[in-house]
Image 1 (cartoon, rainbow, N blue to C red):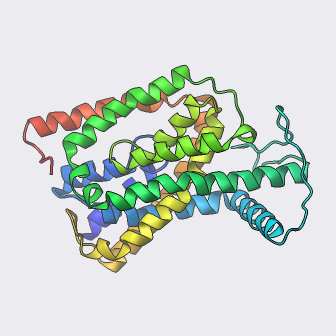
Image 2: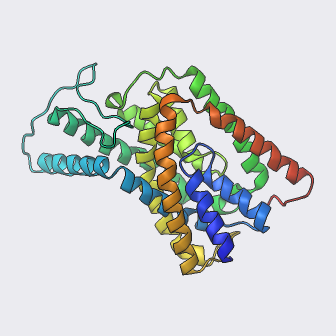
Image 3: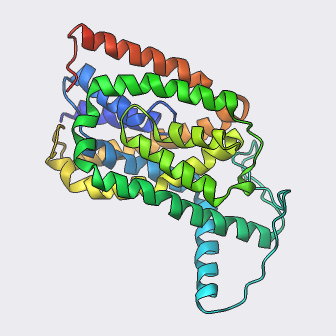
Length: 311
């Protein structure tokens, strides 16, 4: 891998990771069209550490509250200590906004209800991560090889564009994050497994599943970001050794190149997540549907014309 490739691919990873257009698919396409080779699944997974670091920084206060609520509550239960609970009725008892037009979002004033919500979200993230962990490990070889075929990538870009459009059309978009349930978490967790195929999009799959479940667009996108953290971090760390000597198709990247690409992905990813959370408050995900279809058809045309190779 050259330094130009490392810089460009790191930028592509950061810009596209949180948009419902598939960062892995874009890395596969860009590396093939402009550099005549595949960046590799391992390079993709490692640079995703940069974008997930951006999520950790952007949602640091939220993540900190969730971790504290989960660990303290579990510890209290293990030590048989009685913790005070506040029943959550049909109407939300606290507000946990996905975004805010002010610099510092204001949360609900009821600390017990807030703690209960954070504790539940912590469990939902854990439970929803199990499916992709199991499936990703079982099919890791296919993910690194056959799943990166550009015919498959372009097809998934187009096919899942219609899934996103259906989610926007049929989703009621009425339930806030406070009404998230274990069932919601599991369904969105299984939807995340589709992101193992380049061209689907992790955020697109989980957010669309949330829309089908009736979640508001903001709630679906926010939980989608939180849900991705453990899976992406585990995948990146697991793939780190293979990134230097790819087991399947992929360019060999040096340590400094991986570091620079990951740092670039962090910076671009932070800007991307901040922009998307504001964008979805007033716009639907349908804005990305047309782009996915155009890109998919363009790649198919290049493949059919022999301009690029599918493998």
